Length: 181
Image 1 (spheres, rainbow, N blue to C red):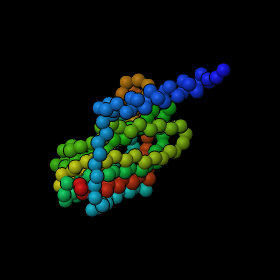
Image 2 (cartoon, rainbow, N blue to C red; image 1 turned 90 degrees about the vertical axis):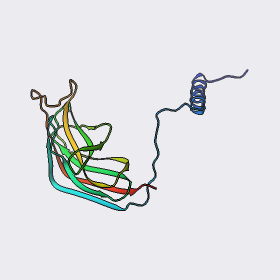
Image 3 (tube, helix red, strand yellow; image 1 turned 120 degrees about the vertical axis):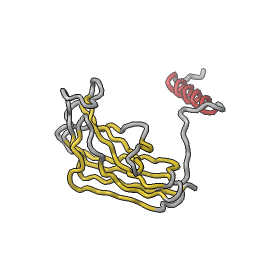
Image 4 (tube, rainbow, N blue to C red; image 1 turned 180 degrees about the vertical axis):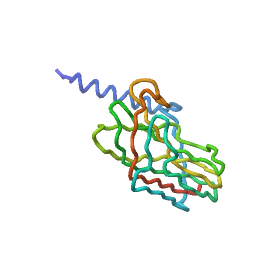
């Protein structure tokens, strides 16, 4: 008589079901796009070894605005590294990249904000990055928008009754300009 392990049979069944779903034509989870750029034609970096932003729910002036020149259609690869401190309990720091034209008009930004949090007694650090595809020739200001948001509860956005703060320090913003292939 042959014995089967019910746990092994369940795992095998789950794996088989996932493989069948992935193999079905036309079915996908998410719609990724692919872009291929050439060797970077230019790299722009701005650093601030001291404080680069006192953030609250109202936001902060642009963090490390970096002037970038694009001479031919290109993909921009943007990195931001920072140390943050002073976040209160139940608060997150929200970061987003923005690209503005010479007149200060919004051209493109990240479709979401990165949320980071930590123990309020500690300094923490991290790096976020994003790529912007097919940016047309021109001069741009690339920068980070930052704000805090009390959690849980309604979005902060200037909630003066609960206006948590954070400090950004030791910041670097780097933009790679990669011509479109």
